[in-house]
Length: 250
Image 1 (cartoon, rainbow, N blue to C red):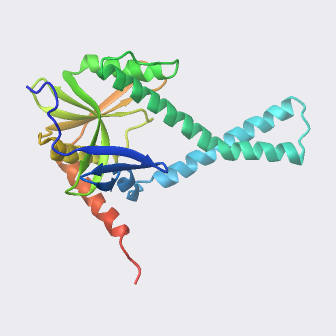
Image 2: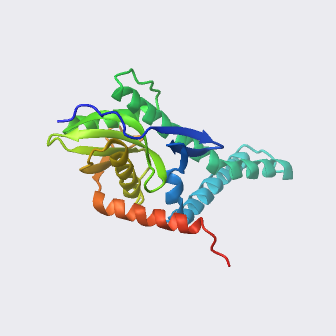
């Protein structure tokens, strides 16, 4: 049974340039899995528009009602300020959620490396869910936060963890702090599995996506991925991404 990853056959470097995640292997820069999967809308644009509108309207409504209840006169100036705050609210909420997800991921990475996780009142819940899930699984994590790339297909990504089950099979593990498991997540781990196999020369037998709730310390949702279909689906999305990047207009 494997207890640690071998030396990679391909050296992969990760960098951020103007907020874009770039993966370099053999002197060649490759786009990220997330960027490639951006060609798949999967209803997200409409869902995000509805969510953003709801966030903005809720803030505007709450502040206007509060002003009325407190007897604050509503002038053009203060209504304009409320509208400006409402316009910024979706980005503010989204950035806060992303920051919390990053802190939970960092705490999990520290734990995997045998370090003391840095936790606050918010991130401790997601981290506790990880510990509770790990206690129920017969999986031993052998590595976390690995940059991988596929020169064969032309992309890169960072997978959250690699584990071994009680059968000695190697698994890709992906952590999520979203409110639900979305259909594009299997495509992500399918991409990671392909690139991992190319970088390390090891066969990936399966993959799991695990969602850790952010408010309930008993809320974790693991789901196994049909890896063969996920790989195929990702490669289909990759072909679409490359086609969209080509010259389509005559």
